[in-house]
Length: 65
Image (cartoon, rainbow, N blue to C red; front, side):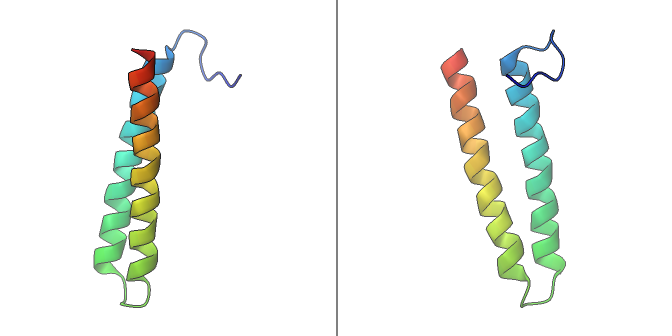
């Protein structure tokens, strides 16, 4: 199993991962809003992928509780 720090609980790691994903989504939204029209759909697709992963992380964290 992948371990970043042995003393970090899995739920805490999932919460942190969710926070990183929220930051990535904010960046992708900014890119979408400030890109030329041909690149906006690509940036928005990244947002959708991030939201899908956020849902998986949230579901995993809830199962651990």
